[in-house]
Image (tube, rainbow, N blue to C red):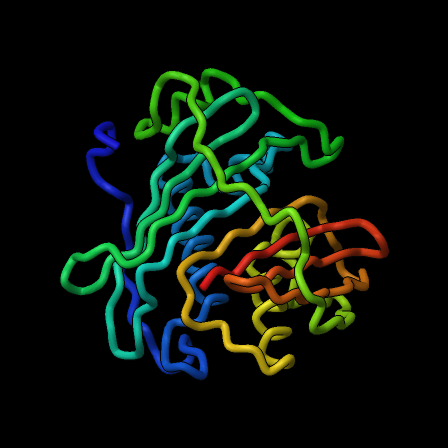
Length: 244
C-alpha cells in the first residue's frame, strides 16, 4: 500500500458501555466505529452524506472483510482509521485499520461500496469530478479481492424473527449495516454460543430492509465459526460470517 501517505484516524476510548461479556470491544461497537470513521473521512473531502444526497446519490456498502488480531479491552484507547483505496466502474473500495495505544495494528479491514441513485435505485458510475475529490485513492481503476463464502450453511442451531424499528434505520431510510451485525451477535448470545475467539468478520449486504419489515435470522454452526443468514420473507438480505 505504498500510495498511502497517512491513514485518516480518530482516537476513541474503550468504555464499559463498549464491551461485551468477555470484556472485549463488542463487534457491533467495532462496526459503528468503522461506519463513523468512513463518514468523517468522506466529509473531510467535502463529499459527506449530505453532499451526495443533494445529488440524489448514495454509496451503499455491499461487503466487509475484517481480520481481527485481537479485540481491545476496557480502558484502552484505540486509533480507528480509514482511507479510500480505489474506484472501478460503479464500485468504490476502502481500507480500515485499528491500532492500539502502542501503535500496533490489531484489526484490519476492507469494504466494497456501490454508487446508486437514491430515487431510481439504479447503479451510477461516479463522474471524474467526484473521483477527483478523493485525493488519497489510487488514480487508476483497481479493485480489492474479497474471500469466498462457504458452499454449505452448516448445522442450523437457531432461528428467530425480528421486526425492524426506528432504532435500526439510518439517514437513508433503510436498516443501518451495523444493526444487522448487532442482531447477529444477539442471536448468537441467545443461542448460548460463544463468539470468541474471533479472527475474522465477513459481511455481505444483498438487499435493503425498511422500518416495519419482519426479518428471519438463521444461525448455523460451521467447523470454524458461525454463519448467519438474514432474510425478508424468502429473500436474502444479509449474510454474516464470524470466523474463529
